[in-house]
Image (cartoon, rainbow, N blue to C red; front, side, top):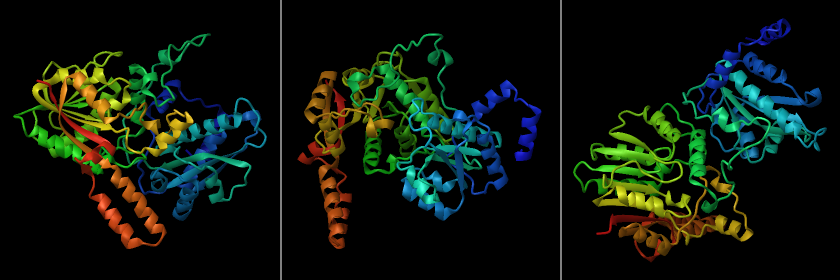
Length: 478
C-alpha cells in the first residue's frame, strides 16, 4: 500500500479489525539482522506518512525525518553520535526522527518526548504491517551528533534512529507481562518495585532478581543461527571463558557418564560451550535458572542448534527461596560462572549446590574479586552513587574478598581443591603501560607489553588475590 491508497483509506473512514490490530502488535519483533536488499523509496515514504497520521501536542506537527541510505553518511552518523550497535550499518535505511522542541521546553508532561515516542512506535508498527523489519536504535550516547551529521539546525532535537530493512532473522516472541500484573482500577496498587535501580544486592528480593533477568534476557535477541545479538562482545571467545570450558571438560572426564548442573544459566552460553566441547562426555546436562521465561528462552535458542545433546532445563522450585529441583547427590559436576555476586548472602545457593552434588563430585565456581582495581566501581562508591550504571544489563552485584568467599564455601560444606586467578592485575598494568608507550611513540615496547599481557590469562601465584576473577574448584567436605 502506497501513499495514494492510504489517503483513500483515510477519506473512506476504513477501520482495521480489532483482532487484526492485536495480531499486528503480537507479531512485531525488533529486527537485528537485515538483508542487503534496498527498500524502495515509495515504501519508506509510506512509513513516514503513517507517522504523520499520529497525534502531536497542540497539533503542531513539528516532526521532521531524514532517511539515511548512504553508507558513508552512516559511518559519519555512527562516529558523531557514538552509536553502539552494528545493525546501524546492516540496515539498508535509517530513519532519523527529529522534533522541534523550542515551543515545549517547559511542559511538565514532556509532550515533545511523548510525541516523538508515539511517532517512533508508529514507524515500527508500520514497518511490520508492510513486511519490513525494524528496530529503534537506543544505544546512542550523543543523539545531537546525528543532527550534526545530517546538517539539522540546533532547535531540531534528534530522538534517535529507526533501522529499517527486509528481515533476515526470526526472533522468538518475548515474554509479556499479564494485564492483571500492570492494571489497577481507580487506585494505584503495586505491592513492591519490580526492580531496584541500585547495584547493592541486599535491596533486591529473589522475585525482583528473577523478574529482572527474565525480562532483560529477551532484549538481547536470538538469531536463527543461535547467536546472541547485543552490544557486548561475545564472552565465549574470552580467555576467561575458554579456561572455564577447558576445566569443566577435565572435570567431566573423571567420571563415568556423569550428570552436570550449570547454575543460573541465563542465555545458556556455558551450556552451549560444554555441549560443543564435550559431546558424549556426560549422561545429562542440567541448565538451571529462576523463571519459566528464562527456560523458554534457552529452549528457543537451543532448538536452533543441531544436535543439542542430552540437555534438560530446570526452573527454581519456589518464588521466594532458592531451591534446585534435583535429588540430593544427583550431579557429579557443577559450574557457577559469576552468579554468587547477585546475592547479598550466597549461602542459600551454595548450600543447595552442595546438597545436589554427589559425595565424590566437584564444582567449578568463578567469583568476582573485590581486591581487583575496579576503578569505575571505586569512584562511584566514594560518590555514594549506587545506581546500576554499567550494570544496567546485569543487575545487582557485589564483589567478594578471597577470605570472605572461602569462609562461605566452608560454611556451606565445601572444601577448596584448587584456586586460580583469572585476568590478574598484571594484565591491566601492562595494558596501561602499553597505551602510554604508544602515546610516546614507543611502539616496539608497547607491542612487547601487549604480547606479554596476552600470555598472562591465569595465575596460581599470590597475584591470584588481585585478579579480576578467582576460579575455585571445590569438593564436598568429608
